[in-house]
Image (cartoon, rainbow, N blue to C red):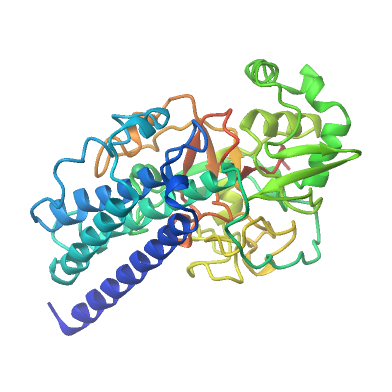
Length: 439
Ligand SMILES: [Fe+2]
């Protein structure tokens, strides 16, 4: 190893250690904010008890980094089955003989101590799993993804508020409500991003017809106009499956909204407040998003359209890592990492806009796209089929861009998230698109 290579490896180790530390700080905050009764309780059948998430984070870290990368003896070989997400659906997890809060905290600490030692001593090259610290990056993303899930559990939890954060920055003037994305090819996905997951790979060319896309996500005020126009009661705007679900679930407004006399209020992490009209709408399912778009004379973007709007630079023709360029996200670019406990008003983060002027693609709210979860051409499952492959062609729709609850380590222009089209507990909203005539 040359001295330059050694310096690069040291820098990578420092970055990994810092990302691991930041993830753990957040997991600790989310689990220390409530008492032990709250940690072991199931706040919704859609979610695990918080104490399950915590020990599961430690168990994945043990499996991949302590045992596989480090080649060490198991810390706890007897609990793998309990924390295997594929063995036990969320609804069943409270009845399992789980580690109690003190045991779970001790377990994740012991695993982390060993992992920091593995990080110091293991080579970061030689086999694909450790190349450029991939396995460490995968575990950082995994913990941050569970932290966002735990944040969603906090949103479902009843009781007094326990989480607090500064308000997000204000909106800046918007030159236009929509932008035209010219037709033609662009590069989707990535073969270069070191911590990209298997479903984002490889990079490939996509040729799109021209389309218009909204500059900002649909706001609560926009969405309220749909409600007031009777959008929930008019099957014309809904797909067949969307209408069936709307009827069965008696949908009439975004989740966590309630009528209070002649106004709407919402509950946000235990605080009841008037619905802020200038914020992106959040906690709507795919069917609600699609119905709104049809009512507005538009449609949802496809995943490829979302990604072209987010990454394509018309000047160079190349695809960027993020809308603003290749730099990692900073607080000036996007509302990420639970720094604020709500989306920022539409039009915020002008420094984070794409070359075409599309804002808030990263952070604020996950954006529903009208695409199914499919592999890219040339997909190879890595490092295990259960990460993505078993979900392909299932009953899922795609979500892009991350939310205010997503950490910078767990989102990028190529990042793909997916969920059932009826899910509303996630921090998801949307923006609209429409066809443009070819010139
Ligand atoms: Fe997991």
